[in-house]
Structure formats: structure tokens, C-alpha cells
Length: 462
Image (tube, rainbow, N blue to C red; front, side, top):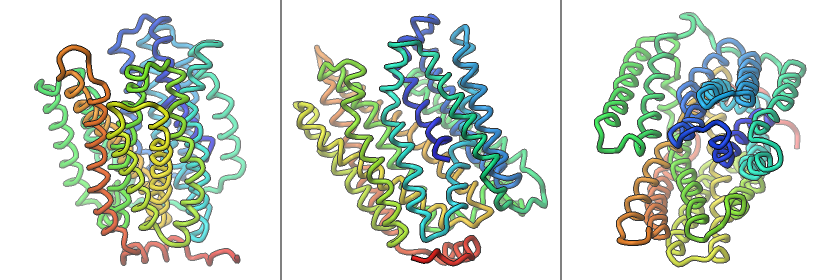
């Protein structure tokens, strides 16, 4: 499961560094390069909940193995792509495969370990994969410099083959959800269309122009489709998304924490990378190294955070993690206009520790709340929320960054733009910390019922 999540994390970050090399080889424009990234993110956001439900209905290992196989086929097609259009199409295939990989790997880890050790297992799984998320820019830069950007995709193939072999040999079929009405095709189309439309509007808002008619039209279409989805699902005996999950305050608190921390995480890291290069004059590979203090702590904190969640519940770890993230973002905002890297890196370390803590506590809380037959869908909801939060955060913080940066006459003020964008992130963390502290105050009634139904087995002996 860790190998599967690692593939997704590595591709998310390694490709960004290789974009100049891709443009040189294929002649891709800036718009087409943006779609090399977005073509992966859109299906991942739109289809994660649908793929997770397929896993709940037809067996998580089977659907996961199919998703990894599709991801590998897309990787091979990316590596062999003769043009920018072929590369974008292959990235879509990768994104569809990743939509199954992210939620179902989480659900299978949760199935395998009982409540007494689930958080620690998820902490190791998330922490190891997060290490590859952090070294993705370095891997992408090295492969692009020493061989070719195409090897970023070719290296996925042996890892995917290994993961599929392990799944087929060792992963049991696991629980399946009852399906008296069959798979919900109409609901799946409405959900994927609604989430995809909102993600598209947020991803393309800057390119289209936030004041243009296209952005509110696409966002409005997404809202309409999601409203229709809610109306259709309210009449089904077995809805695509169990609404009782979102009615549970513990699960709702986990979803809110995931949404807002991903809002801050992606916006802060992307804009900090721009700041390190444009304001401090670092080269791309050096800037990637300079951001390691913000990502490596996730590897170290996640296992410990999972252990603490097993012992004490998600409230303390989530609240502390959000507080650390908010404090570090506030410190970076105050230091950015006149900062030197020697003053910034301690705040990056605190930021990484806070985000790593929130990631494992929310994942564990979501899996503990869900029943055995709902864990895939619960993970799908969390995955979709992460992608929407990341997309919205990058759009909102980038818009603030650009507005402030270009408001000055003469030289663009990158540090001032980063300061205001990070202050927005700090405000989001403050509001989220208060809300999750209230929502995560011990397991609610629905959580206790699900926990008993999902994990009848006794905890292992100490």
C-alpha cells in the first residue's frame, strides 16, 4: 500500500521540475505545460470517491490492482509520448488510475490493522510516502539532467509490477458493501461532473481570468451537478456516498481539517518555491533542497502522531498540528519581505511537523469512524477533499500573491506578495483549529456504533 501511495506522491511533484525539459523536447506552450499537471489532478479529484465506491462494492484489492495497472499503462504512454497532446492524454490515464490508488490503499491499511494499532500503521504508510513527496523535485531534476524526463514515468513500471504482485499474493478480499441496487451510474456521473467542474474552474481561473464569464459558468455548473447528485442520492437505499458519514461530527471535523490544511499546504509550498527562486535567487534544484525542511518532518512526525492518535484520539493531535502549521505560516509571512533563508528554515520545519501530524490524525479518525464496508468511500471522500482543498488554496493564495506583487510600481515585490498570501493561510488555520477542536471532542454516537460494527475483534495483547 505504501508503494502504491508513493507512486502517486512522486509523480505529483517530480513532473513539475521536468516541465522546462518537456517544453524543450515537445515544443509545448505554457498553457499545455499547465495541462500536463492539471490533466493528472482533474480525474484524481473527480473520480476518487467513485473509484472508492467501486472498491467497496467489488473488492478493494481487485479495484486497486486495476488502478495500479492503469496508472502503469499511463506511465508507459507518458514516457513514449511523441507529442504534448499525447502526453496530456496519457496523464489523464494516470490520473484515473491514481483516483483508485489513493483512497483504496488507505482503506486496505485500515482494514488490516485494528483500532489499537491503526493510527501507527497509517502513520508509517503516510510518513514513508511523504518522504517521496519531498524528494520528488530532486528525483525529477536528476532524471531530467542525467537521462531524460521520460524516465520519471518509466521508473514507475517496476514499482507498479511489484505492488500488483504483492496485492495478488497477500491482500485478502476484505469486506464488501451490500449492493441491492447495483452500482450507481447516474450518481457517479453527477458526482464526477460536479467535482470535476469545480476543480476545472479553480485550476483555470487564473488563465481564463477570474473576471471572465467562463469561471462562474463552470463553477456554477459544478454546483448544479452536485445539487442534482444530492437530490438523486437522497432517494437511494445505498447512496454512492453514505450521508451518515458526513452527519458524524468526528468525520466532518476530519474532512474540514483536511480541506483547510491542504488549502494552506499547497499554496504555501508552491509560492515559497517561487519566492526562493525569484526573491532569493536560488536555482530550481537548490530551491527543491531548500524546501526539504518543510517536507522531511512529515516522515518523522507521522508515525508518532499515529501512535498518539491510537492512544488519545484525534482531537489533540489535529489541534496541535493545525496550531503548528498556522504559527509557522504566520512566522514565514512576517519574515518573507526581508527574510534570509537562515531565518526561514526553522519555520519550514515546524510547518512540516504540523502538516504531518494533521495528515495522520485525520486519516485515522476517518477510518475509525467508518464501518468496514464504508472505509473505501470514507477514504474517497477524504481524497476528494484533499484535491479540492489543494486546488482552491493554490488558486486563492496565488490570486492574492499576484495582486500584491504587481501592485507596486517598478520591480515586483515577491516578498510582499508572499506575506499577504501566507497571512491568508494563517487565518484559515486559526478558524479551522477552533472548528475542529469543537467537532473532534471525543467519538460521537455514530462513531461508536460504527467502531463496534467495523472492529468486533479484540485489540492485540500488549
